[in-house]
Image (cartoon, rainbow, N blue to C red; front, side, top):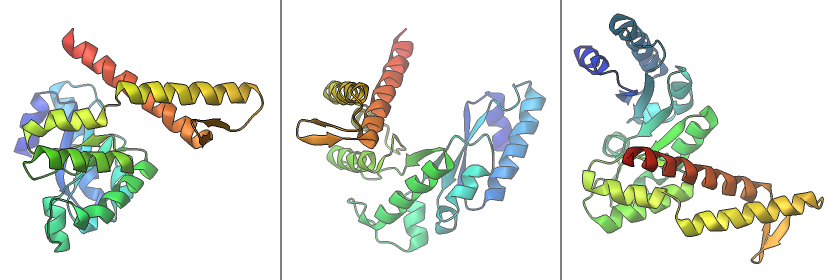
Length: 220
């Protein structure tokens, strides 16, 4: 509690809680954060929560954990502690956590919160890039890390490139043109585009715009 008191004096945007295994852990944190907001004159409800899922017991309850507080904006999955809890043998390819990472993003998406992928805990740049590409294919848009040198690599992989944004724009334009003609699908570059592809393209464009806005604000 002393640690939380010290953190709350700094008026944090987000408070992360490690080793969350039950929904009531988040409920207790919410209650404590609310008290500190009142004590320190912070706008009540303005502090978000990020539960860290580090045990099998937490993984299978990710949905209820995410729903335990309105403050929760995302959940983060650990790698080393979860692997240890599973008794899994670690490898830089992350194969032993493949199912856990797939289940975690499904649980978070169903609960309507951001899924933060587990960190890559080896030092090689090629490995973290490969691991982040795999996470992005699963649908992750955020990833934790333990090595500050990995930040630029992770950001680079998770940020849509100009070529990807242009292609997404072509998909949106082609599909919306087809809709004006009363069609529910359209062919583009040999692929049939339907609503899911169109929706993904729009999400990619929105993500790119949001990240570029953050960059502009940071440079201002």
